[in-house]
Image (cartoon, rainbow, N blue to C red; front, side):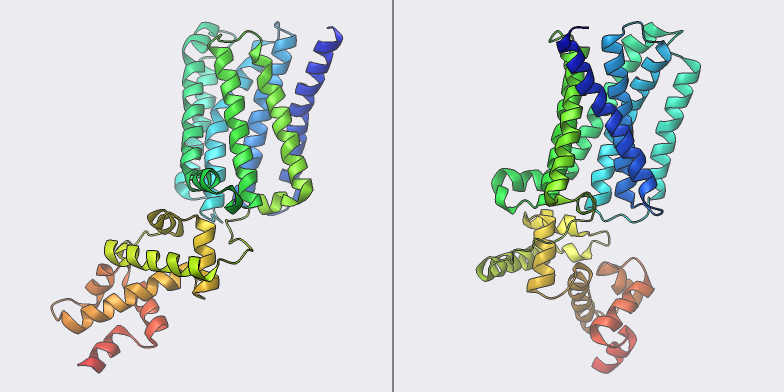
Amino acid sequence: MNIGQQILFFVSALGAFNGIVLSIYLLAGKKKRSVPTIFLITLLLALSIRVAKSVFLYFNPALPKIYLQIGLSACFLIGPALYFFFRSVQENVTRIPASWKWTWGILSGMIIITGSLLPYAVYPVIWNKIIVYIIYLEWFSGLVAAGFVLRQVLKTFLVNRAAVTSTEKFRLMLYAGNCLVFLAYLLSLANVIYGIYIIGPVLFSCLLYLCLFYNLQGAGYENAVQPVKAERKKIAAPDALMWIEKLEKAIIEKELYKDPNLKLNDLAKAVNISVHQLSQLLNENLGKGFSTYINEYRINEACRLISGNDHLTLEAIGYEVGYNSKSTFYAAFRKIKDTTPALYKEKIS
């Protein structure tokens, strides 16, 4: 190798190595890891393995086929890891849901079964003509799904960059970097640009170092994987009043509170505001959390139905206003009205 190739090898290989080291550090750094951290570790490992395979194959075309199989198999986990990382952060997931575990079980099973029945060393044509395209399609689907999760942050970034928090910038950087790495590999697969194959590892190295530098400058890894929080800058009173009126109008006209599965991000989408701004609006300007805010609408509607619908049972009214169970309805009613639905009905009668 000449000096240019040596530098290229060093930069790209060092990124893959550091990605693996960082993954191990995050894995062993804490006894109890958050759900976002678990998926971030998975993402880093999958990308690092894929990049390492690319580097060694580029400089050693005679690389044993088993390493090619491992590298391509790692691609199968990159898209899902990115998607579940953003979802776990956005939705404040503290325990991995059973459906997510099933998804990862199926993905792992597909990798093991395919690798066992159709090893790359024996069936290179099948891998290069069929399996690799399935892997890239699944990788692309994961990127699209991750972008859908980040759609509100992306929209805020395009409309008003000043409203994007530092942690959201980190997520956007992570997403953009993953898209560029995928694009480099995709163009290489399609033979669009000669020599672009090695650009994927170089881009990954740059992404890794940028993220580390960004965190050292103050964003902080821990903040990056924490649930979305309100901005420190207080919302101006006129703006807050405008958003509150818009929020109330959407909730009442669309009867959003009747949806038992209503979440903070659903409400933010309905009024076209970012999740962290809505959370800030509720907590700082209205002095209540999302659950309390929605429960007040539900309980007020329940009181109206109790007063004017003798044909509905109290349990039916609970379901009508958005509760999934009688016990949840009764608990919320007592918290808001300081009495039970039955006593409230008896009192107004």
